[in-house]
Image 1 (cartoon, helix red, strand yellow):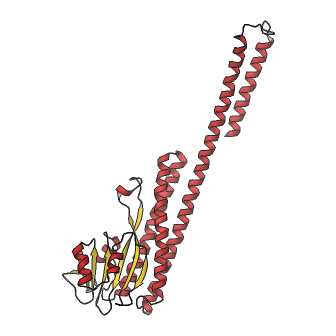
Image 2 (cartoon, helix red, strand yellow; image 1 turned 90 degrees about the vertical axis):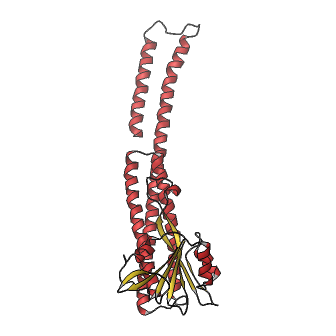
Length: 317
């Protein structure tokens, strides 16, 4: 699907075709639309192939022959339910969003394999002070919006972590630990993608990929600051998740040790009557079997064992 947008009276509006200063948005293109990008717009074949590769990592490329620039960034999104570990939690993944800058043309192009919330926000006018006639600044505004979305998603992950921690304090079930696994996967995706976005922004800053003006440099500095903050938050969340997992693993091991010790003590106690009655089951007379000394000694032994069990239970707690 191909849509065309242009800024009119300070607002981004949809238009019918390519005009001066327009923005071309391509989402889930058909084979005919991909051919149109190559044949009509003259986009390099390698750029088209990389832009629609869902496993492509964030990077910036410059075609020396045509002067075209391709910039790919990873955007966060909520993972589909059929791909989620547990449908009761919100998991996240990332997917690439590509920008193609064509020299000596009054338009720029965004390419993606699925609907992107950031692109939708710009297309519906949710972001202010956007001008499609300034492609570089538009791209930096999109990059800033993407980095801010990372922060929003990380705050959501932190809220879920706190909720799971409270649940685990009350009851430790395998389901809660599997939910932790889902959040850990989201954090791994975010950590990898943020590193790619940071390196891409650093490469753009040198001005070799696209031309930057003074105002653009200030906006790019804001982007790098937001990305750095998102990276730090992702690292903190990962450390907290690992700490929670390790702590509750230790608690589970301690509970298992307590259970095994209790079962061992019960086994020893149950073995004593078996030994005693085994003696009485023999066809041999026992010493002191007609006096009160043996029953008294047996009662004292049982009381001593009971005291030991009670004291051991208190110590294990």
